[in-house]
Every structure is written in structure tokens, then in C-alpha cells.
Length: 301
Image 1 (tube, one colour):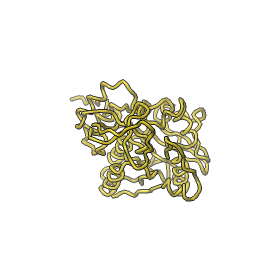
Image 2 (cartoon, one colour):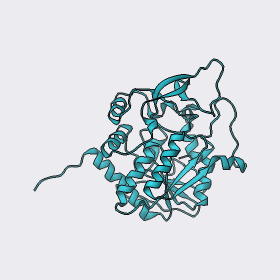
Image 3 (cartoon, one colour):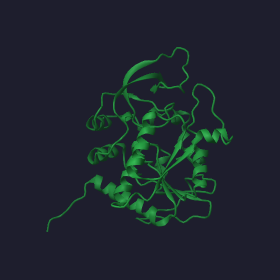
Image 4 (cartoon, one colour):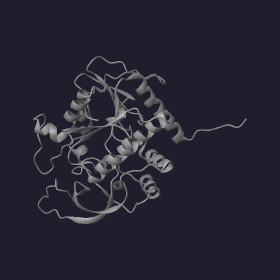
């Protein structure tokens, strides 16, 4: 009798599929939080795998800041059409217009933190009891504390000291009215794992991840893309560089790296030699040492 051995990508895939099926079994109205980045694309692909040949049973929820890369929005719309899935969009601009949040001022103004209110409003308004995210423990120290099932109180807040124990494969999704959960099926994946899996499965990703020429400004040790929302400082000059992005967020906060990696193989080789963290070029994480944890406690992704 021949033996079959799972490689590490098969094991990670199996674990993620188990968690996605547990979400569907334990919650009434779960959604996938979709940003258009590689991690949420990966989670969506894994959901396809988990429920094949049926369609994905989850709606996709996108918090639209209004400061997105155009390439991200086009990719999102094309993917939704190909999946035949439902898309729920929460608008930060609408939250601003309603007076729910105030636009930041100044040269480093961003709508990143404003997403929290829009996200929580969308979760409450659509009666979502579990939001599935693409957070990974290797990304950032606050995310390293996350459980697979991450409890949020009735204010949408996260308390890292008050999470449910997860013994073996037992996941506890019990909640009181008004509370909800975030689920993170790819918690144990690394950036390298993500790229190797994308390469193996030939998963489509936005062109922003591949090296391309773009007008940029060097700020805070990162190449920030030029856009209508970028306010130039005195002495800053616009340059044209061949860059790519390791992580995608708002166009105002996502820094690129100089790169020649224009294929998945080249990206994988480049990532394997990196000594800088994946989110090292995100200006929203540089506001303080605890920037991510502070936002997560308020209800961030």
C-alpha cells in the first residue's frame, strides 16, 4: 500500500479549509473582508476550495476609503463578477458626509483609521456575526496574538487578554447579542507561504504586486505613489521608479520598493532574501510602536 505525504502547503491549505468550514457551521451570517490584497484574495480562493463545487457561501465585504488604487478596484469588480458573489461595500466617504468620522488634516493625513467606524457600521447594519480576514501572525506583533476565532465585544472592540482558549481543533464561536467574531484562517501562513501557494495554484493578483514604472515620492524611507491625494512637502520631488508593492492599502499610505520582480518566480526569490518586514513600508504602522494594536482594540481589521 503506497503512502501519501502532505507537503507544508497542503497542510496549511487543509487547516484553512477546516476553519472556513467551521465558520460556516457555527455562524449565521459570515462575510469575507476583502481588500483586494493578496491575503484576502488567498482567503477567497481557499473558500472556493472549501465549498467546491458549490459557490462561495460568503458575501465579500469591502471598506472603500475612496483612496484606493484604481487597479485594486478593477481587480475587485472583475473577481466578484467571475465568482458570482455578493459584494457589500462600506463607504468611508459616506461616513464622513454623515458626520460619523472627521477627515484628517495635514501632510500625512490618511483615511486608514476612519475605516474602523465604517467597518463596524457595515457589520452592524448587515447583521454580520463573523468577518473572515486575511491577517497572519507573522505580519505584525499585534496580529501574532490573534486566535483563529477572535472575539469582539458589543462595541466591536478587541481585548487581547480576554480571548477564548483554542484547544486542539476546538473553536468556540459562542457570542451574546451585539457581539461578533473575526476569523483568521491563514493565521499560520508566512508571506513566503502565501507567494508559494499563489504560484502553485496560479492565482490571479493585482498588477501592483509586480514591478512596474510609477511616479513616486521618497518619504519615510518608502516610495509613496503620486496621486491626487498626496500633498508634497517642500523639497520633495517626483521621480519615476520601477517599483512594486509587498502589501496593499490606501494609495496614500502604501509604500513601494524598488524591484525588478515582474513574475511570480522573481517575487518569491525576492521575498526569500528580504530582511525587512512586509508591513515595513506602511506609513499607518509607523505612527507609534503600538499603532496596529491600538487600532485593533478599536475594531480594526
